[in-house]
Length: 374
Image 1 (cartoon, rainbow, N blue to C red):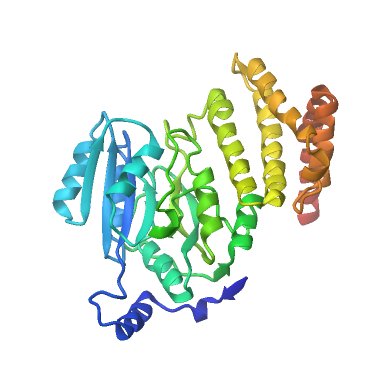
Image 2 (cartoon, rainbow, N blue to C red; image 1 turned 30 degrees about the horizontal axis):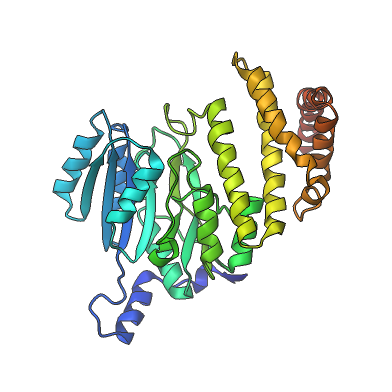
């Protein structure tokens, strides 16, 4: 992995000037970026999102807003913005979900580069200038940036310029490893929205019509990218506390029928590209999450939790098939292996351990650390 320090990073003006010197074509160094914004019943938030896209310091944009059958004022707001800025095109369609909305936007796009923004989020004013410059300067196929969790009350300002930090240039193996391992040093994420793609990289990929729609999409894109530029700067603002948002309204049914389906499809894709090592890593991360979800369900008050826990147990029991290989992968933690062994022997053992750990052991450790610090 190559690392480019902040002092080594060139601006988009320097890079595009070089491109123009090397080509006689008009705007040779200013490729068009298609920004696809999905919108559904977010009248209180879509203006902030569109304001942040319109205000980009890189202005050669095609902004495609897909109104996914909104029943509030969202559609009117989007149409109003289209009259103010000629770069904006609004597509109204019947409601089908986030994945199909993004697919519709992509089909209507013409840009050499593609970006996705969820209509209730917003972006830093220099997001695409930084992300495109990283791709052009380093010959990358896509770029990825950090993101920050934003509050629903926050507002966007044109002065919201982020100071650019280091850039890490990763090859295919590195980017896939950090995606699957969910290493917090490089926040790649399954999400489609903190990325800028070369069009040809994703030309034949589409989003499924269900939640967790970008899990497989991102894995495919990264597996095709010979070079990926990771920008260690939080340029995307992900709003996490809006009532009614997709993540906050996730249900037990969606975990079984949508999230787990996406996990399986991701495994199938990794197998298809002969990366069984990543399959074991991915399974390790999945089972780790499922154990936590099981505990959360047990401690909750949902009347359907027992049925959900039984369904979840059937899935978790599948870890027996490749247990040693899963818990011997590069990122495996012996403590996680011990927890799974407890669960597989008897969920009651696991439940007792988790309650003791969360209610006694962890609070005691925090108390000791606070005393040491003071």
